[in-house]
Length: 605
Image (cartoon, rainbow, N blue to C red; front, side):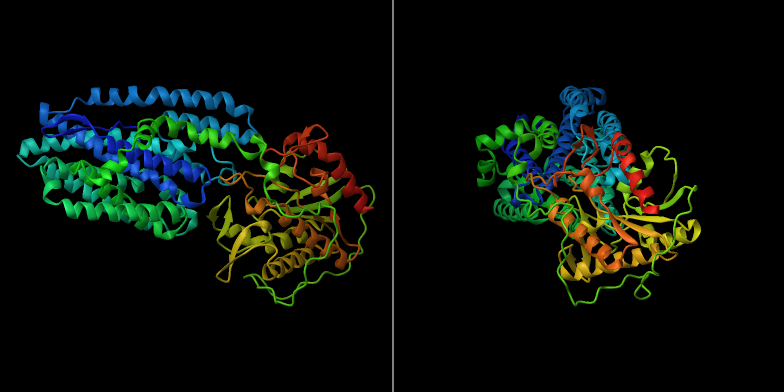
């Protein structure tokens, strides 16, 4: 998207086509609308593919034009022009990110990752950086990087390096063998499109593979190569537009309709997008491009030559560079609009209420063997020995134990699993994208049973809730807490966990979930899993279970401790307790330690 719309056409020299600027402006407008949370721009991220098609066309046209005029390509000069045009603006943006990033509400882990992201952006390999980062749990669930948008620049720069080398090699081979260079380039381009499409289809086997397909240089090359093929065809087709004016107009109109449908309706996780949607969008862009270039007085060209679109297109590189960091920084909290966002009723973490009753039988997971009931808890901790405590939970519990200083009188056994909750079932939505449940998460009943058998603890703390507030697909329908069927399922999972924990008479403590704010939607609202009413409903379910199970099962009100005013907060008693809106900070854990230790010791007396 960084290439200026200067194209070389036989007989015309190097000219500027306003309509190509307008097409670029339309594409960047779609991207901005998508990132800005405009409802009708659900698939606006596909505007990037329009940039790819334009880049493939323009770069190939420039290379073929230079070869026609001079009999060769000055590779060093070509790369120098790209560097002078692209690098200074990128360096300025990255410098600003490095200076501002540390002052944002970002966890230390994100800042560490940001350094690597900036370096990858500078080296134009940000797309592969995003792919490799996706293998780590904390980066899967983290706030998007301030330079995440540079993945597309990385793909283009890789193209700028590889494609000219390939073009020069084809030129030399064609001269030696007296072959037609355009024909060979067209064959390579079409073959590359086919290979890239097949690779997309082969790699995309489910929601978990979206990142690899979406960010891959090999999978996204199809748009660039389609642009290359268009350039090769048009380079040898003088007068093509005049001979096929009606056909080109119809193709451009169809292409425009396809782009509108894709940019307004397609989600990045839909299977139809890989490779069908990507290929269709690139071909549709190519149809509009051909009409604009070959029929310069067409209605398509006149619409795309409108002043605002042209101006936006000519500044698209700078707009694209800066829009994403600004969008991430100017969130609802910093702009003061968060309080105006609807969040539903709040009951507060300490409110005791009974969830709606239901007669619906809960669905059973693969490990279910029937109802699990607990033996009354009657064991007593032996004085003078450490309070043996098994903690099972998700990544919030993991950060609690990871940062917990040595605690005299309490022996803590870690059975936490990052990214795992009591709720199973795939796929689930987190941060608006689809994910699959890890197989290791499905082993939680066996893991808990093994830990209880091995440690024979005095107390078992169950610390779940984050993953229970997600939207999940069950029985072909999307459900979440508050849905009677899903509530019954969660209650069955919770009863099973409590029964397993208390199998040898251990006391059970159910830690309430604090309010979370991991990020915000593009429109400034909170994601469904961060909605306070979902946390309230889960905590009410915990209290109901504790009340029905008797004195051996009680509440450990961590939610109230971290959110004393009944709303999300970053700080309590002047201490930063949350690092990223979900997980605990080291200083927050140290602040919690005296309270947590006293809760466990008092419970064991």
